[in-house]
Image (cartoon, rainbow, N blue to C red; front, top):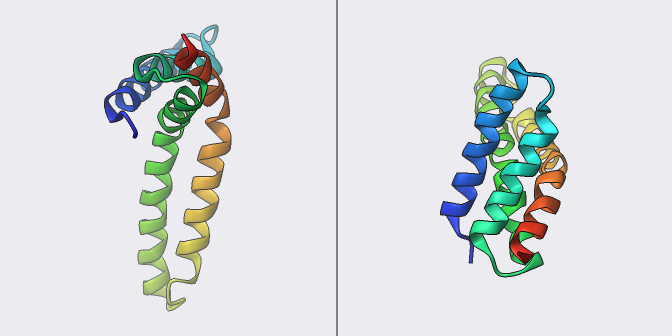
Length: 116
């Protein structure tokens, strides 16, 4: 079962460190993903699998939210232009896939955190 508290805390840590990483280039986005994923996995506990899952969700949460919002926006333009929603579904699939692939460092760190 997913511990949404752990996912939320990991996501917020990633968000804050990403903002700081944009201002201070030494920290960087990868550091934010690793720390946030590790935190989510550590809070959730339960071993490698559970930590991996919670780190993956924490890392992908922002991307999934953006993908859903962009899909809704594309759907509005599809309906306006008369494409009958042909583009919206493909944008959602591509966006969620990209979010999950980019969340892999967070998931790996979450697996380590979950094992501790």
